[in-house]
Image (tube, rainbow, N blue to C red; front, top):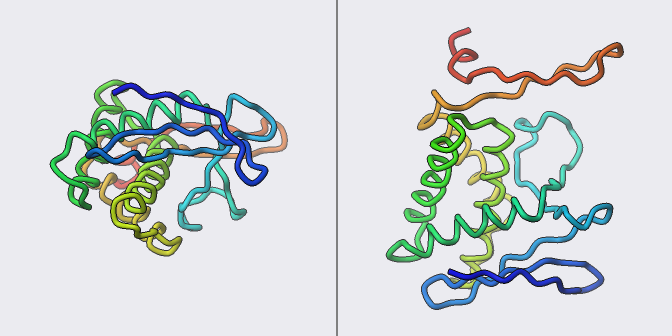
Length: 185
């Protein structure tokens, strides 16, 4: 599968768009270019408030290259499935996580949360293309929680949680704690 990424302007928003072919349908994967850095894209997260480390609405900014690489990989896996269904969507998501774990020998929670956000974005676009069905925010948040809980269950030995501590003297200090170590306490 070849993928071209093009820059377009829609309603005053500077976007990058990649067209992928899934079961002979063109599916547009779009992302808004970050205002401060053209190398970043931003997207809305459906992460429930109780899974955020801050209480403000968050919009995630990530490398455009990383985002589209992850989306390409997800779409390639999904396109190889027999049909467009929730079963194959979930299978594709967990296959992508396994590939990450095989490569890096762990899965940090922030990476997991990005994969979940991106999978939901892909699902929204794919379901709109195939079924003319939109995934609303409430449904996306429920799916987000399901993907997180199932990931914690299936990959618990490989997941690391980012511990954030702030002090006036040191600023923000980050450390990783293995999920199974947290569960044992």
